[in-house]
Image (tube, rainbow over all chains, first blue to last red; front, side):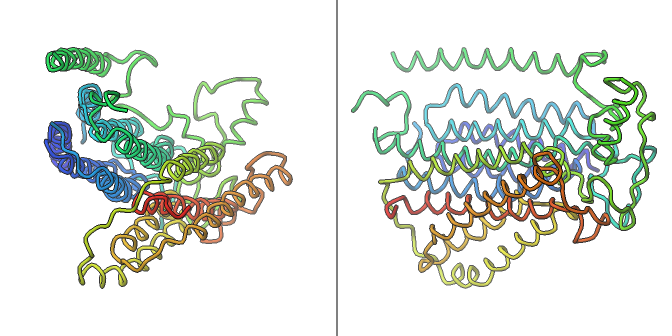
Length: 81
Length: 120
Length: 275
């Protein structure tokens, strides 16, 4: 059971990483980064590391996305060409 | 149970994708996103190093109250302690790097690193 | 011209990444030699240095080594160890039920002091660099967000305080607790327009917490002749009043990390005009 969950999460993380790099809009890249952080926290939980899972869930998918979005607002949403 | 080789592969592939992004992207914020992907991959790698087959979370509870040298069933807590602090430090350094990116935008009017330096 | 340069650069980067990937997977697939390969499967806690942290017998183990004139263990069973029971074992050298906490705060406490300092310096740099950058208005929050914020953010902050006060018993501790408090304040910052972040208060909490950390460490130096030594009774494993200074340091670290991250986020959102 764990094998299936971790396989799905890992492969989704790899796709999200590709999306974060190749996305045209910066906001897509940032949301993909949040997805990677969220799935990483679930994998940490399944690997018996609850302390790290709590930290990663609060920071990787919450605070870090917020600071990226604030920075994006200060740079007026520059798009990558 | 979980095959460690597969888990290591996920972490390594994520690290390589992040490295490729850092090397090839032109937008500063894209580079920082790639750096964050690399950071997550390294944290994942360290946690997998500490994982032990059929291990439990390293916390004594009321439902699992005994621990001695013959009944060890914990995963390795040392990499977890390392990663716990590394994540928070990573947020601080990412915030600092984003501030530098904002300053670069204020100064050059663009986030594209190939166009920086053309204009004063 | 620039475009061809970019394509060539991408190609070189791809080659580099592929070569590095071949090295990674070759290292992963190597047959197991002693100490020469990556730990793929068949790992036991007995082989790791964390064994003595988990069994809470670091002092006994080092005394054993000294008395036998050795520098390493041949067999782990030689080490004197006893069973640790939740709710019964008393006066161990380290009394927290959460092993990660005992490593972060007690056995490797000096690392934590350094890491808190790194976070402090990065937030100082952020505050300095954000001077002279204007605030940009965001869209006015909707009624649902406003109502939800007033209801939820005190609960989130309270949960963060719970997490760092119980850091030696349950998963969590100062770093996750501080991050949760900061996310509660983030909700206030984006959800309530009338909310003014009090930077003087956050700075004083941060400085006092940092001073308290160093103060506790120096108290260990004076009482036990060692920096960051646990000078308080460790009590019974599993009780709230146990683990001596571990709980105190995690409360201090939680307040410090929460105040620092919250002030960094507020600075990133509002710009540094008022400093």
